[in-house]
Picture 1 (tube, one colour):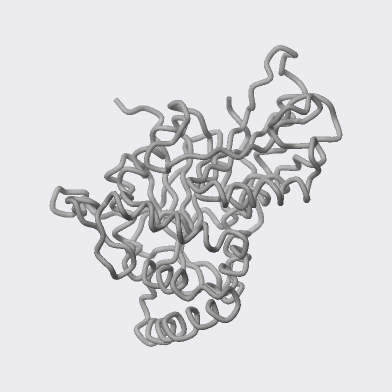
Picture 2 (tube, helix red, strand yellow):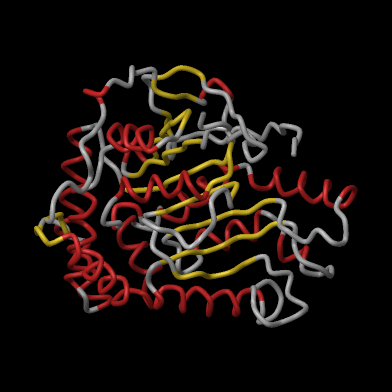
Length: 352
């Protein structure tokens, strides 16, 4: 399917900044509506990918890290699950504490970078003119991994106009799937979805009148429970650093994306400015766990989350890992000086 490319308005400012060592890249998918920036800002690294420049395996032995602690590879998944079971009911509060509320703006920008509103309009126009009554498969499929509470998925649903589409009969042309390893997080997300959209309006389930635009699925990012070439867009927000084997998760992201599909990862990253980095470290280690203890009575979970940020890849390393996993045209965009970054990559149209 070919959609006309729609230029979205430029959104720039203090929240976003592209990596500078780069050359212009070109989008290659029907899901590649331009991000809300000038085309001159769409960049990719021009570093030569040699074996010496590739990062070592994220997990290369029986031991890995859980924050600053060394644990067995098999133990990390259990420990991470316990952290998020502990904070599931207060997940939004946790994100507010971790980011001083900025996570809401970062997620809004992540959604804008996908160009979902323009794509949704184009998809619905096409469905209205050429879709047959027997073809009820989604024309645009979106996967949000490690998004159990629905914070990113709801933004997709709203930006794509799914609640308005639910006023009409039949299955929606757009589907949003939330996948999370933690059933407690998914439970919170489904409850929030029912409260936000109603029981039988959007959610996949037994209601025959549902447009089935939104579903929640339990699964591991390292071995997703989906067929090859299933999704046009894959997002993961503040979840990749908690995966035991990041390389495995990236490879599986390539697998489940359709050729030409796009991967976007929003994650805490590294500040290149030493002064800002020192101030951020002071806030993270001295303030966040203390507030977590006061507000949620769970200091340990917040201590882990702060430490996990420091143990995760910097912008350049994650970019190389994505390229090694098989993504093309990989870019990253710093936000708030590098406190977080959005990494973007594309599944090649052909793997030959």
